[in-house]
Amino acid sequence: MESVTVSRHLEAPADAVRAAISDVEAFMRGGGFDEVVVDDDRIELSNRVGIATLDLELERFDDGESDLAYRQRDGIFEEMETRYTVTPRETGCEVTAETTFAIDVALVGDLMDATVVGRQRRRELNAQFDWLANRVRN
Image (cartoon, rainbow, N blue to C red; front, side, top):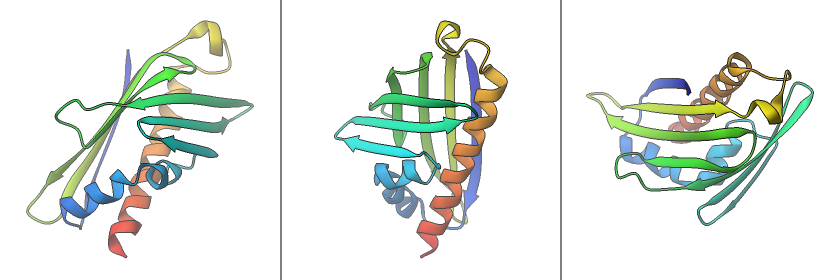
């Protein structure tokens, strides 16, 4: 399994950040995905990465610790999970996202490897954190 973790300190109350994350469709769009559809606990994402278009079907789940957690139901990965946690700090809060994944080589072949996926995932998570920072500032 590969892992990508991104954290950021935000000058906003943890509850405000959690509320922004709970707007899952807007939060996912903040990551720069080309298409986002949220239907209850199901999330469908589509994103163009280089010459490939990645389609993922995700399901939200409650792990008892994360503010948002989802795993792949269908897509390019053998398995993939992402968990977001918001931790109050003396000033503001710390937001952390961790994605763990295993690539299904039969589906992606030579087009992508873990390095490419990790780099793309960091961009998406940083874009989501930029969106959060702007959302809670307004």
